[in-house]
Image 1 (cartoon, helix red, strand yellow):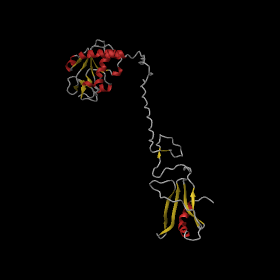
Image 2 (spheres, rainbow, N blue to C red):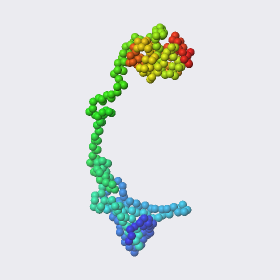
Image 3 (cartoon, rainbow, N blue to C red):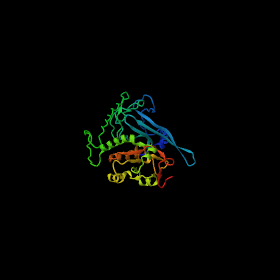
Image 4 (cartoon, rainbow, N blue to C red):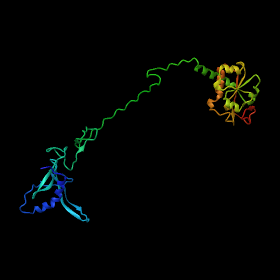
Length: 316
């Protein structure tokens, strides 16, 4: 006989009323009665056969009226894992067994009581096998805590140009770059500037035919506005040859002014950051080239009110 299908299951529900009527006939064939049934629910119970479903089924017909299909009864055997349903065979009623699921426990294995569900081991305390349920753990045994994870020790910083045990990087030789000489020139220029920074009146008094007024701004800024009689040598163009062409001798008096000496003319005299003012660079550069008779305009003056004569395209 072929195994029961869903249609057989439904037919059992439909035939339940007929089975009840057949039970009243005196000459009906006997059927196998189940063991005493206990309803599922909380409370101390022993493994046995329990009623899973025992209720009347009905449908709604085309006119909206309920039509009874009979009573559906299912039994579950907790000792074997078998599920049975009531069906009719000929004129008698019999219990049909539904095959167990493939991973259900085998007969004879202990089954936890209904009132005490199994406690499953949390992930990490016991291995999990794909396709198999985790191993139950007794409730009184606490799950093993996860071992502490080691904290990685940060690696020591490694210099970019050298290995971990290397000393200071070796200097790259270039005969045209003298950093130490530049520092010496800046230090000497600072000593001279302390005595050679002058005001407007002194700047005008030092302006003689033998003196050179040197403007190291760009050519565009010089064309807009500059001190009358000044010569222009943009700072990037300073060389020994250009200085010798404009200044007759290292002893010639040189008068300097730059962007941060004149206010109210931003197009001609754009303001520089104070610590990067061109005054520092121009003075130190002249000292580096051997020119030490240098004077610098000290104050910040307004182009509209200064006594120093100005000329150029933007002259007031």
